[in-house]
Length: 125
Image 1 (cartoon, rainbow, N blue to C red):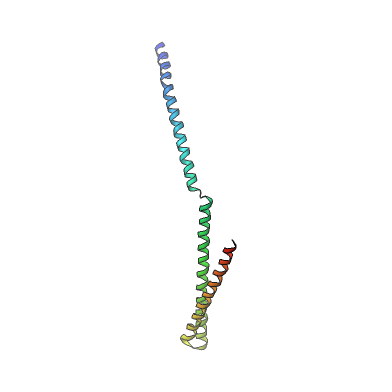
Image 2 (image 1 turned 30 degrees about the vertical axis):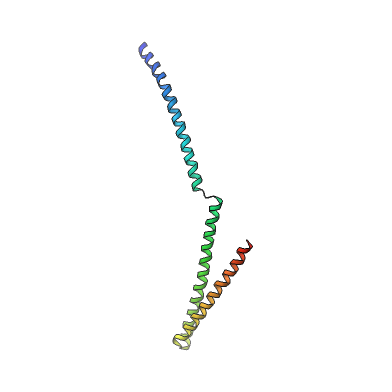
């Protein structure tokens, strides 16, 4: 029994430097992992400049969609009116041609008007 007790005493002395080394390695690993997590958190969180750029891009896309819809709506309304007048007055292609061109002109004017208003708003900012 004395030998068993003596071995366990020596064993605990042998484990204590190993445990200290293990604790040091675990502490080092924890420190490195926390540094990596912080780096990922900073990398994924957009800063103020990146958020502003994303908002500007989304705003520009919204403006482009609005301007294109203004033009398409003008052309479609002109075509519909021309087709309607052709049906009522039996002037087969002429009403469609004339009102299609008028719709295109109206669409371009609406786009220029909307772009001019938006340019004035951006100057105020």
